[in-house]
Length: 231
Image (cartoon, rainbow, N blue to C red; front, side, top):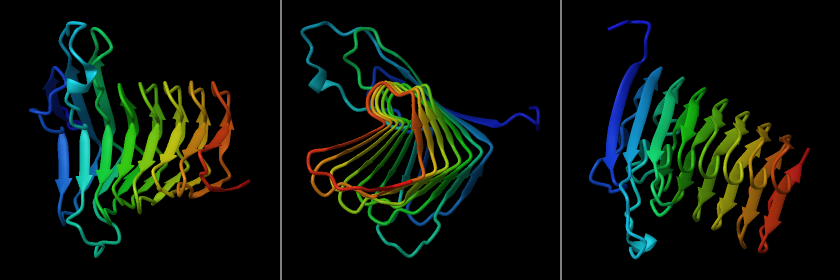
C-alpha cells in the first residue's frame, strides 16, 4: 500500500437494510483519534414495486456513528480529523431512505469532528438525542438531504466555521428542542433555506454566519422556534 494514500474503511448496505453496520462505529467510553481515513458507505438499493409502501423501508446505517456510554465524564471524546466521509447510493424509484454520513447521538456524547470532507446521498450530519459535539472547519457539500441536522431534547454542541453548500434541503436544520451554537459558517447554494429553525423549544445561537444564494430564505424561523441571531 502507498503510505501517502489514506486508509479506506468501506461498508456495503444492500437494498437500504440495516443488516450492514456503519463503516465505523465509536461506542461507549472510547476516545480514539481517527485521522486521515476515508470512510465509505456504498448503499445499494434494488428496484421496488410501486405497491410497496415507503414506510416499510428500513433506515440504513450511517457511515460513521458515534455514541457515548451515557455519561458526561468525557469533555472531549473521540476526535475525527481530516477524514473523507462519503455515502454513495443508487435509488431506482425514490422510495428508499438514503443513509446519513455522520450520526452523533446519546445524552452527553462529546466528540470533535474537524477538517473533514463530508458528502452523502442523505443528510451529511445528524446530531440527536442530547449529543454535544464540536463540529468545526469541515466541508459539507453536494448532499441529498440537509447539510446538518440537530434534533431532540438537550441536543446542542457547536457547529462553527464550516463550509456548507449545494445540499438538496436546508444547509442547517434545527428542530425538536435542539439548541446548538451555529457560528461563522459559510452556507450557500442549498435548495432550501440556509438555516431552518423549527418548533417550540428549538433555538440555539446563530452568530456571524454568511448565508447566501440559497433556494429559500437565508434564515427561516417557524412554528414558535426562538433562536438568538446576531451578526
